[in-house]
Amino acid sequence: MRKISSTNYRNERSIVDNCPITATMKAIGGRWKLVIIWNLKDGALRYGELRRKIPNISEKMLTQQLKALVEGNWVNRQDFREIPPRTSYSLTELGRSFVPILTQIYAWGTENKITELG
Image 1 (cartoon, rainbow, N blue to C red):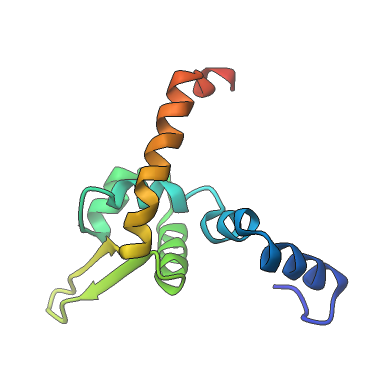
Image 2 (cartoon, rainbow, N blue to C red):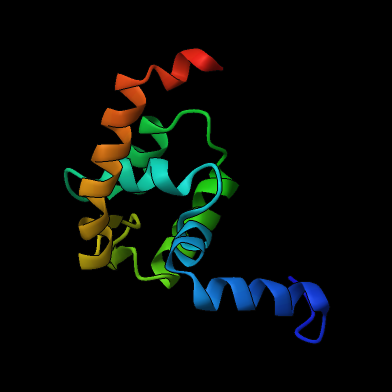
């Protein structure tokens, strides 16, 4: 986290505050957030189900990314307050509204063979 008085912080704020593209990329940036959103597009999943669908993510990273997505209002976290603990994650209205964009990105990437470009 940058100090609020730093030049880097002020520069980042000026870009993010004035550019919806940059603000969106900052909100969903990182390696795993889009993968998590993509996996939740068809409905709620429990933590263990998400972990199995994204086998290369560490538990720590999944927890951190889910927390950030919940704090950013992209994902809902529902704790059923049972023993053993049961928690599920689902997309919020904001998250669901992003799914068509992700679907277009997926189609574009497939059509242009982006995964083959390395």
